[in-house]
Amino acid sequence: MKLKELTMKIPVFRRLSHWLLRIPLIIVFMQQGLSKMPVTPETADAFGLPYIVWWFVAYGELGAGIGLLVGGLIMFTRWVWVGDLITRFSGFVIGCIVTGVIWMGQPESLTFVLLYDHFHVLLWVGGLFFALKGTRNNKTIITTELLIQELVGVSSRIC
Image (cartoon, rainbow, N blue to C red; front, side):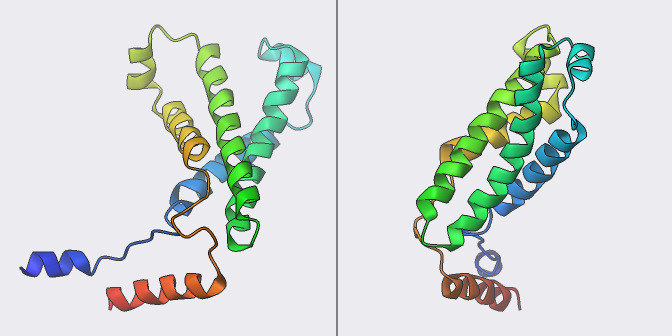
């Protein structure tokens, strides 16, 4: 019975757990987008891509990172549906960009990608997660009071 009691004391981060995945994706995509600035035709040629594709990739990465951040922060307002839409669109953009990156690598097979391209598979699954889940929770609006209750409840369960 002690194991069950110990397990029940482990905090549950229902409303905030998505940030554990959201923050690394924000960092990776904003960093990748910023590293492509300024967007030039010469850089696009170096990667064997048309300039318009390179432009969409660079600004798509930057926009997806910003979108994940903004979409997550809007969940603390009355405009939850806007944050949900932004988060879903950002996740879709991430999935599209990472699919293109995987295809540009010309892998031998899907098995090869799954076994040897872990980083891109993880980014793709992260994008898919946010495209499918969005920001909505069981409680549609997360108020400051609910956030404080969540954090206080977690700290009291740890002690």
